[in-house]
Image (cartoon, rainbow, N blue to C red; front, top):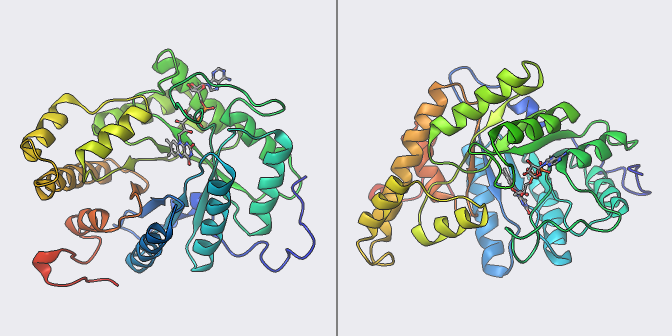
Length: 331
Ligand SMILES: Cc1cc2nc3c(=O)[nH]c(=O)nc-3n(C[C@H](O)[C@H](O)[C@H](O)COP(=O)(O)OP(=O)(O)OC[C@H]3O[C@@H](n4cnc5c(N)ncnc54)[C@H](O)[C@@H]3O)c2cc1C
């Protein structure tokens, strides 16, 4: 049961703004932006995360999200980091997956989140641990689809004020047979009570626009809920290739060619050139997304703030940063 645990009342209902509200309380002429963080694995990563959190706090991120991994220690880190971010204060969206959890465990986690005032939830299924592209193996007594997690939250006393988001996939989820099936399942999550979706990273804005059109055409009420584009400013060809592989997708051939040209056979030596292509691409995509009325720009930062800050600067949304400016404009 998602009810308050004794002694938790001081943190409960801790004035977190609902993420779905950040999409509507916007300043005219200014598109909000938000960022994704990963829970750190070691001390160096911990320092990097908190430097990034300071930077994005100063730059005015409308919300920050924290990913959820497999394994107990990773999960504890997610909760700890989300709690600390919320207290900065930053509007904090905590991810939760079904992997290796029974229903009762999921309820206990939801109770923990509620106790800490973490009422912004990204409801996800997650991927099989080990091989993310392997077969989905249900946990005994667990759930199978993100839509069931939304039902679970909705049926728990004490969790009524959770503001729920879900994942959406501009090119379709790799397990869906076709885009029609993908649309049906994404809509099921929105109908179950999700108020918005955040997309998987993509590199062709047309894919995002088609997803938005598909959803709105299939259901003018729930399908018209905000679709937040997930953007990743590429700074390394190797790591973006790996991320795409894990997501069951591939880099568009033309983009890969541009990145390979910039890397000129030695990615390490030519990192600045690769980074320049990535930042220019994300800037161009963001300009078009803003023109097309995207409700927010969500940057997958890998806990590094500067590439995102450069994109924001190019968009006129942040002070400059970079060696050519001589100093950091933010902490
Ligand atoms: C913005 C974003 C953030 C993410 N954060 C994390 C994270 O923090 N941790 C992590 O581990 N992963 C994360 N992921 C990855 C995500 O967990 C995987 O992409 C996963 O494979 C799909 O999750 P889902 O919530 O979309 O699943 P679901 O919506 O449950 O869909 C899973 C698959 O089942 C199909 N399906 C859905 N409902 C049904 C049904 N009723 N019958 C038959 N088929 C159905 C769907 O079409 C899809 O192919 C994130 C993804 C995105 C886009």
